[in-house]
Length: 169
Image (cartoon, rainbow, N blue to C red; front, top):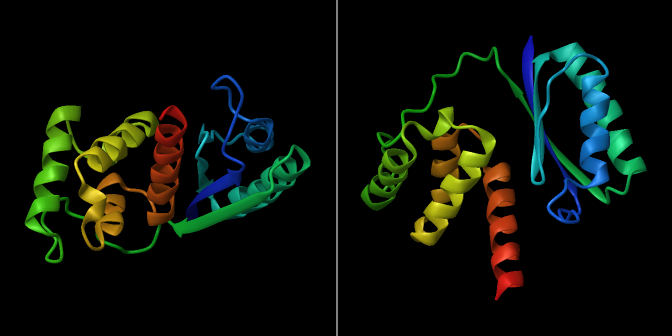
């Protein structure tokens, strides 16, 4: 079985836009067993064989805690599960306004939100936040589906955006 694990370590703040040591320590633990983590200040994700990934994530969490993490939250997804991929902008519970906003951001960023790299996904969340997308009911779930992320990850992105904006005000 193949899995995808996404985990977030807190606190979110690094110094001088550098990743905090608890983030880099967790990534190092994943790399030691040959995995290639996708990491950023808001979360780390890794995919692979369930046995390898789960064992490695255990070591990554220990490394994060040893380097100052005060909280770790994770999500595990079965990549082999027989689930149809979401169809962006065509779900029945998606409001027309949110569908238009997602389509607008996809056009601006040059393609499907789910195919974007992490930094572009974070930028997409910022654009959607600026346009009021998250004022709509169940929008975080819909945006998460469009991005190919968990709702938890979208909320982490939003929290970071809001914290940064508040600090700049």
